[in-house]
Image (cartoon, one colour):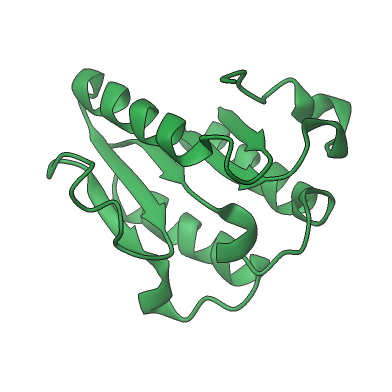
Length: 140
């Protein structure tokens, strides 16, 4: 299952995502992972959530990022939820429209492996195809 948090810059996407991380962590029986491009939120999440700084792994494009996520999923059979902040920046994609293929691949692997994904990125809900618009969480 995939959930998307999509809004313009400065609308509170990361704050909402961090609230979702905290909520998931308090309910989780398995592991929770938070992926970002830096460690700026290290003190905002509980230490039971695994914080992954992707800038440590030289990810250069969407295919490499997909492989990275697949590796995290395959290495942890107790994984319940992955939260990804700033998808477009992390995967070097220019717009939400450019990310559609990656989002669909991530949705497929998360469904197949029974891992929930919540992803935030800057953009407009209307830039996404109708099937992905249904996955966008309302938070504003």
